[in-house]
Image (tube, rainbow, N blue to C red; front, side):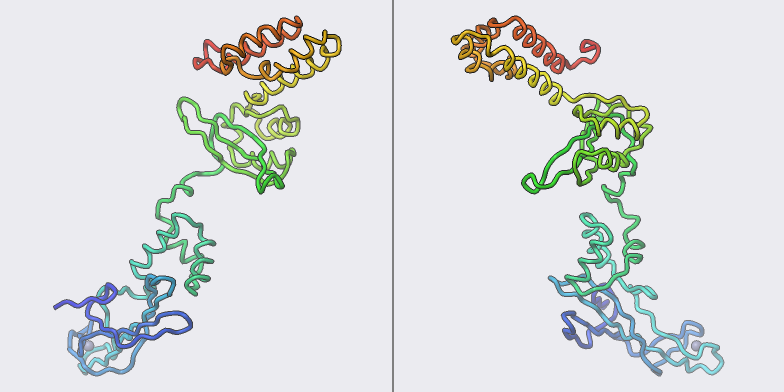
Length: 326
Ligand SMILES: [Zn+2]
């Protein structure tokens, strides 16, 4: 009957103990005599033992090592050139330290971690010191989505935006790949910590191939524009919708502040009360609000003109067909 322990054939567990938080298992082959690889003579004469260490899958958080005591036999055939030979164990390659099972455990870690993180994790959690070079050689051929992305990324359209994290105490600049008809998925490519400076924007733009980018969408922030002009020779700077509408709304607010003092008390109150309706998108107003809005913008010619312009401008963004939008 074939007998397997830990994927190895014809071995038995001699002893096991927990040592410095590790489980150590000692294994030995079950057979009593071995065949000389040169002359095929059988021998029971053991000269000494060699220890072959293998690393197994951790059990819970305990690292497991096995020591296989391989016997070194004397060849008793006087005409054989081989004096000594070490027994081979089916399933155990020469110099092989990691079992297939352990490799698949590493492969699981690799899906969420890079090499230094795996190394730290093995060392901290399992007291196991695996060199980065070993991880690399075991795992380098496995597919991994994040490694399949080649930097710098080739993409037509990108966006730059600032955002804050840790409750507004820290800022970073995000680089976004903007999807289009051939490649519809938009996603964050990279981010660099720091404020809205040219240096931070330039640092994050290193993640795209400068030749491939045709347009960069952003607010009207001068340092960002400078960074894009320096780093991306082929890219047009495009003002993004949110910031563009915001600029128009800022102008509307300035206009309101300017015309307010000259208005009659009645108009003044009407305008102050309905100001938010002017800034809101027309499609989001209910019937009563639409009526109030119409009455309000008729107070002043300039106000009416800028409102109509804002809504016409906004309607451009609602057009899905690029040719019509042009
Ligand atoms: Zn021999």
